[in-house]
Length: 235
Ligand code: CTP
Ligand code: MG
Image 1 (cartoon, rainbow, N blue to C red):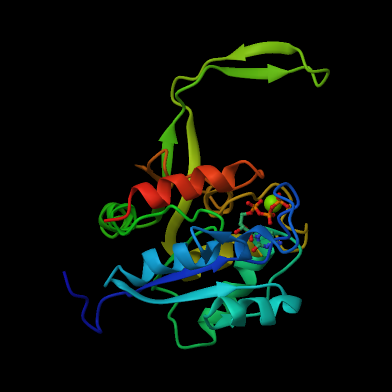
Image 2 (cartoon, rainbow, N blue to C red; image 1 turned 180 degrees about the horizontal axis):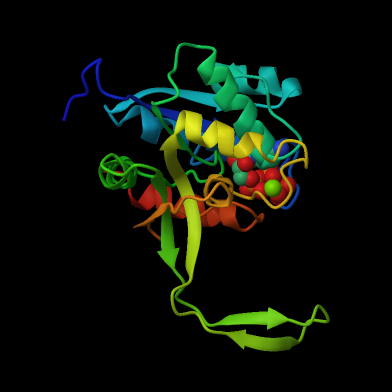
């Protein structure tokens, strides 16, 4: 399907400004190699392989311009103290670059390097007809435990109807920017993904089934897992 100039366009925004404290390493995890390529490049390549994505913007930390240049893509160095702030700054950058408030944005963690064009297309297909937008997510498969903070189980929580939020998360840029702006004064407290800001603004994002492969590289052992999946899924 081709978009015409009269239709809203789709943009990708990759928050890539974290320090990767849980993953460790000499450089933040998103710049560490996975299958021989800096992690963020895998995510970027998936978006570049989707014809309906007009452009992808990577938001990096102000000090990371050189790392990003080494990784081989152009960026906005307006990353913030939190993921939400990085996204908020990136949305504002897009809006100063000719992107319209009615255009769509797909926000995607640089650390989810196993995203595929097929998953991106599935999210776009589901969200385009929707007024608000939605997110890739996975129904919770495991039994969910509440801890007492002393390493013991305090309760078993009913997993029925519970989903794990992934990215990309796709919303109208203006709606998402305004939803996040409402939390800027509080330092985006409690806003851990785009959908949570959109929900707080009174909307109900669409849950679109993602995939277990779309994991977020978080801990040191996740690199080997991501690498194995990437090498295995190559043609
Ligand atoms: N991110 C960002 N700006 C921040 C914090 C995070 O752009 N201030 C990005 C990360 O680079 C990552 C995504 O948001 O691509 C998801 O965050 P997470 O996996 O938590 O990465 P980090 O915050 O870097 O890792 P950690 O929480 O272990 O420090
Ligand atoms: Mg983090």
